[in-house]
Length: 511
Ligand code: GAP
Figure 1 (cartoon, helix red, strand yellow):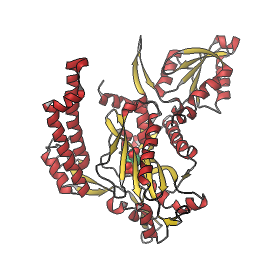
Figure 2 (cartoon, helix red, strand yellow):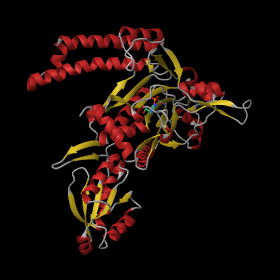
Figure 3 (cartoon, protein in one colour):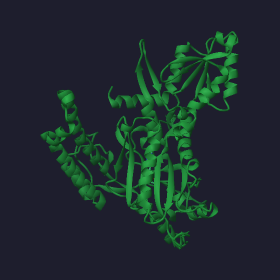
């Protein structure tokens, strides 16, 4: 099945089973804003727990914070967001559609890469086992021509971005003959910068009100609380502050479901270090974060690092963790070495000293910062994309979400084989005993096979069936989602069997 079809199915599945809904749907929706349904919120909470505990519980030098969304407007002046948090936009005059100029060029680069991949796939088929990919890449004329095209475009694009040269970005779009996907024309406007921050007014009257911004990242709430946390927590460098919270960006190209939203959630950690050690810490956090992703078991080959073409105004090194979504490798998380830019700016704009006295060096300095920043919603999409599978069985097919057990919204379903003979009462009793530890669901409707399918579709790792033998010997069958294997076990063993598998410990053990 084509990857786009899988993605469409996945989006429909998220709605059908109560994971994700379009915001304000009964009013025809609000673009790039989504609500999480009864199962989505459970999965989201579990993702946040996996991140929070791995940061705050497992690192004794990382503590948490929950700062407000509204902040003093000068913070965004100091951070550079008022002046520089913008995207280069271009409009097509025929379709009246607006695009990010950099995204149009990135897609063109991906097209060239795709041509190379196609040649390789074709050759692999033709030559079979004797195929030497490296030699083919180095000698095939079509691959070499596309490689040169890619490198030339890449160099030109990176330079235009770094120079902030908007005319050159437009010229690249024209030279590459990039067309509007809607009108098919090359009738483009000039490229302009567009600030992504939402603003609103705080204060009762128009005269007394001041413009404030909805935060476009949670990080600034951490920077402006650096001194509070460091002093009250008696934190010694190196140490980190972690935060989960909402962020808002007026994204122009809002596509691909919850991948790019206007209201989303971030999990960010700022790690404060001694100046000069930041690149070592950058390397360490890069590895730590990649391990966190890979521990979920979605396949190491589906991850890669992507070095930034253009460093943000605050960074001296930056890398993305990319995951292979059904629509290609895309950023899930950013790891940035932000130097002392933010704290120094806040020193300057607030007039307050933001320093750390390092007893080992016997000197004060503005700490350097390494940041890890991941979107909860993108992580959610990663989990759902990796978990969704359609399996051909002997008689029919099943849709199953192979969500890692610790993250699954419902841990077990308890199913009485029939609605009589005291079986529902036993099933309810099992739930009453287990509900303090696990999210359980009771289901007595339809055949047992249909009930298994419903649980497969929402990713429940265990189904427990109560039948007539249960009345005689207090045993039930436990069915495993991924293998569909069934085993007879004593009711009293359920807590241990399930607890062992859904516990976060197994995941944390891999970090
Ligand atoms: N504090 C640094 C920062 O915000 P970023 O690369 O702009 O860096 C970090 O964002 C992460 O936040 C991204 O890797 C992505 O997972 C998530 N993110 C950013 N914009 C998003 C959007 N519009 N919708 C959903 N997630 C987004």
